[in-house]
Amino acid sequence: MEIGVGLDPTLGLSVEEDTEVSQKTALLGYESIWTPEGTGQDSYQICLMRWAATNKIVDGGLHTGIAVSPVIWRTHMAFAMAAGTVSNLTDGKFIMGLGAGSIYRPASRKTLNIPKISTLDLMREYIYVTKQLLNGKKLSHDGILMSLHEAQLAIDPPPKTPVYLGALGPKMLGIAGELADGAALNWCSPAQISWSRKRIKEGARIANRKSSDIKVSQYIRVCVDDDEDTARIALAKATMHYALGATVPSAREKSFGYRAHFERMGFRSELAELDEMRLKGATEDELAEAFPVNILREVAYFGKADQAASEFARLSTGLDNAIVRVVSSTPGKMEGTINVIKACAPNLVRRNI
Figure 1 (cartoon, helix red, strand yellow):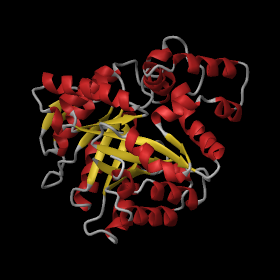
Figure 2 (tube, helix red, strand yellow):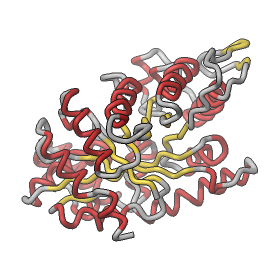
Figure 3 (cartoon, helix red, strand yellow):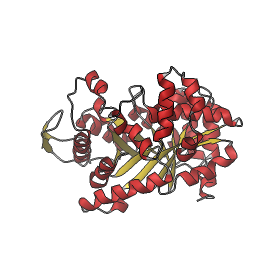
Figure 4 (cartoon, helix red, strand yellow):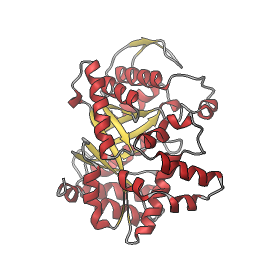
């Protein structure tokens, strides 16, 4: 199992601090640095910056990756160009993850004037077309939102960047097994990782692929602090917006995205109680205080640093690439980030595997 680090904008790091953390990550023996992507800074440039920082510490630099880029923000060719460029400049040390993001929500589609479409069909198309372009193929394709005619990526030799698919539900996991180079999981318990692997394997079987060739990756959130309540609240705030959603969901909305994912893992009643609190006007702080510890313990770790490595090892069971997704108890201060990456250093984690 490879062990990486995941850094995101909530940590509040400056460019200089991000560079320092990246180099510290390399010194501690991590093998990769990952980032999610939203509508802030371009994550492809962030990956290139981090690779350059680690290249000063480790010959060839660490692998960098994005898990994941929501497909609604770029065309197939734009993804291939961005990923291919980073791959080219880092000598192949880049992995791109593509995900559906919030495209299943009507409000998100309205933002970009996108009609109601099949999320599964769209992701199948993006993975297939983007991989073809990255592998140097010339293709014509009548797409769901856009089409290509005799299109080809003008990078020679072709960058052949690995493409992972962000997947939670059984059908999306199946597509990962059929088409992607890897599956980027998120917020999965060890039991859910095992369940996910079975769906990936079935997709690979349908496509006559070896399931062992499809890497299974996941962010595992970790927040450490000597004050366990401080760590708990910070982790709860990082978790609840995924588990609950931005607003109290309708019955139909509960069958999509992360809400469906957390309910699939058996947390329906706990989330329903928090929804009741939201309907009564509970604040974010009140929700974080009430957020169930059993959910946090099932998918992440909070607490003192000396237990972080062993818990991370437990939570990473079944993964090919386990990523320490840093949750800082002191956002805006680099100390909180450094404390997490030191507590989960690969040599400490591997003692517990």
